[in-house]
Length: 248
Image (cartoon, rainbow, N blue to C red; front, side, top):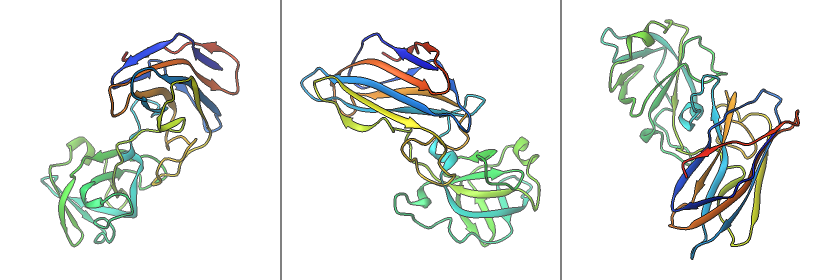
C-alpha cells in the first residue's frame, strides 16, 4: 500500500504538520517514508521529518513510556494514603545519572501490573513522581489514583524509574537544513527498538501499532518551506491514497 500526497504545500514560520490518517503496522511491516522539500526564504529552513508512534488505542508513545533505568523493583504494598510505595528493596540506580539525562530530573515511575516488563507500562506516574525515598519506601509527590491501586498486586507488580527525551522519531530528516533546490529525504522502517533504548533510525518505538507522518517545519527561524510528494509506502500492498495534512 502506497499513500501519496502530491499537492504542493507552503509553510511559513514554525509549524507542525501531521497526517490526519493513521496507518496500521504489524511486527513484520516494512514502511518507506519520503518527501521532497526546498527552502524559499532568505534563510534555510530546518526540518524534522518522521513518524509519530501510537498504541492500538491511538495514544502517542512518548519517550517517557519507553526510556527507563535498568532496575525493576517489586511492590510489596501501597500506603493507606496512596502516597508511598513499599518495595522489596531500596533502589540502587534510580538517582544515578546516565550519559544524556539526569534521572533526578526525570522522575517518572512506570507501573507494570502483571510483573512483566516486556511491554509498555500499564500506568505512568508523571514527573516529578517522587522527592525522595527512605530505604525501600518511595515517597510520592501525590497520591496514586484509586483505580490504579486496585490493579496493583502485592509481591507481583513491578515498578521502574522512567525518563524522557521530549522527542519523536526523526529517521527521514533529523534536524536538517533544507537547500533551495528540491531535495528528497526518506527512511525505511522495520522492527522495533528495545524497551529502555533511545530511538534508532528506521525502527518503530516498542508497542507501536499505528503511525502518522509528520514534519516540524522551519525549526528555529522564520523561514519559508515548500513540500511536495510526501509518500508513505507499506511494502506488502500496492494501494495508493493521499494523506491529508493539518496545521498549515
